[in-house]
Length: 278
Length: 273
Image 1: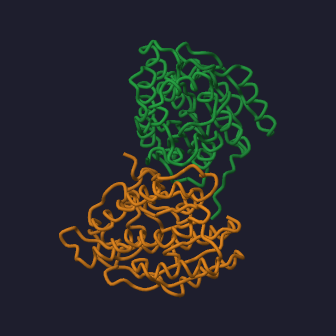
Image 2: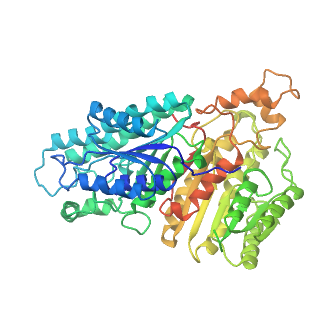
Image 3: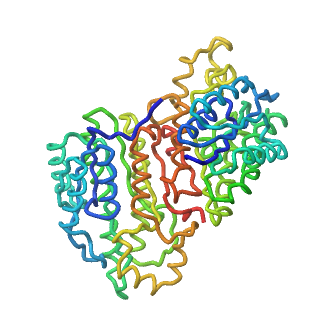
């Protein structure tokens, strides 16, 4: 029996799509035939120390998808704002058709700061709002169109090794919130997997270790790790690699959303160089 | 998989044959091991030499080489010999799929020593002996090992204490091997299938377990579809062997080059809590 990775005629909603893992996923699914609804805030959030994505980044994603002869609808929208996100998704659906694939990828990491006196409460609120509320909003913005279409589908929520362990915990608002939100994403995945099974919509999480993207490859991260050598050691992988590439996460997601994994649902899939088994 | 060699146990039929043929189609030569004979307490017909010959035929039809051997995974000396011999003939070893498994059914208090030993011996000790025989060869150039566990390796069902204990044991073995072998660039993962449409579930003993309300000997495939579907979240009673194979093929590929130590359910949501 031939099971395929052909997403010809399908539509994928991807948040955090302006750069990093989100862009990598968009390009990968476009290579496999999908049209893309790409959402990104394209603006800074106060508690986040490293530079977030820009409108130019989102335009670059559009350029790379269009170069593959696929259609893409880009929208600047905040996953924390359900009305704005719903409007963005609805406009994408109006242009491209109902959603088949959802990748809730948008996330921030306010723990990565060299600020010796950050606003812990604000950092906690911001990361939970983006990394947990934002994931819920993303799924709910797209699922009605998936159910209406009646063709099943696949949803992948991007969690983290911090969704399965608390290694590197430091009591900061940003780290507390990051670990809590990423663990919370697993809870969302499980309840959605049960909710949506009857509609043949599969829901899984991926749990990357550090990925070579602007979220961790920045001066703030370097300063944070130098200031916290204990945490730096705690965050080492089992396999002898410092970090993995965005394409490694895209490979896992491309498999999960394909027919190759047609009976895979409710799964927490680490792509973590052995981090969680250490 | 071009230029690589894969060892598959339980390769005479079912999921094992599916793995062997798929890896061959992707370019691997295959060392195929199967007991090809009955084990006393197993209540369904096990594979035969003819089954293993059919696997050989299908791998050769994919234009790949295959070394097929009848051996019992419970026999450490025999496993070492067939793996060493297969590697000597095919030149190397890159991939291991420890798939051989058997089951029987009884409540714990009614499990005989023989039933316990046959299932734990095959499903856990056999996986260990397969891995142990393969490790020295994998160390030469790194590789990937997939140990086939089960949804019963993550959750529990009644009447299967021996199988459940063994399949949980495979998870522990997976994690230790991942730790020990990471420095040698050998990845080790486990796969956890729900019910698969093979002779291991489509037999009278299994049917009687699932439909104790019906007359033994008169239970059909349709009669058990409902109870089997009740185990899964997705509305399907069982999967095809290819669905486990898809996960195995992904895990042993370069696409999963940083995936190690993990448990991957392929289970239609059966273990989703």
